[in-house]
Length: 434
Image (cartoon, rainbow, N blue to C red; front, side):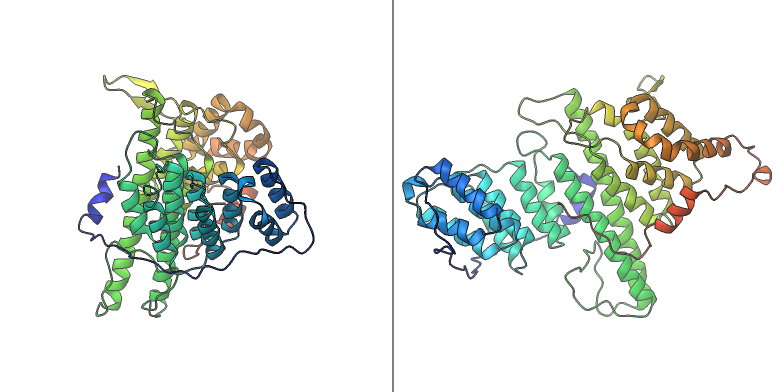
């Protein structure tokens, strides 16, 4: 997988979390009003959904608890666990899991997906240990983990800001099969890196203002190079800058691995390996990170130009025979389905803004031409917003090469808005999954 960053964790010691004890609250057994208790599992599941969706989750659970065992099913209990999971009520979800097993119903992949979601959304300080135990216990129950379950575990690491374990988990994934990384896998990892960059910039700001960063917080950043207690102030700043660079490089590696993996699957699809699709959310995470580090890590941030061109076209490639050919945009090659957004106003804004910061005006012109060629349907509602601005960039791209003869770029309404909305260098923003 990410061979360039896997070596970072080569000497990390593995350990057993042991048995994690969590106080599990009893499930409700009485209802606020009298309900008819169905004897059929299908009708019971339908009844549970109707009552819980009306805002009476305790009543819905009590109905299940009062139902006869023959009228229950794994689906019903999965609904109970999932309902608690969405609310982040970890102890109740675990209790429902215990009740499910006590009644003789075997857990399924959906059961463990819900339990991992409860760990991610819950506020327990033992959530990571519980999630790891939950994931490892799948084999005990004869349930083979899928990439959905892996993504559930990665979401726990993301919510609890444990980047080291997330990368370790990712590097253990196979390249093919049902546990091969999905689009969600890459998006979770990229979002973690972007958040770490933001938190590291906040730490850097505190150091520059003379404040100590020794105090541990829930947003404690992951350090590729750790900061010792006796490290001088100037060395701390240098180490934080180095960690920002390493984290951003890791993000670029994640993107490169995704793009290579996606292209390989599109042309050499294995029957046991699901296809990788493209969605703007992953690209927006990468481009936002490029904007965040642009002033400090300009050579690295400018790799965003190539990423934009790779996804949407506008450049030419040289094949192995030295022949220059027009490259097929990644977003076209992957043929995203209706569940994924291939182009939207935000990603166009980020792409144009990044090229504008680097004065790559011709890149903007070529990008817009390629979007019109390959994504005409998606571009049509965006045309009114960006057409006039692209025209101005076209004029800038055709100015003389002599810098003394160039005029300063006009501060259009769009460029003013980008300047105002540009992510502050030391802001903390999140890309948590919905």
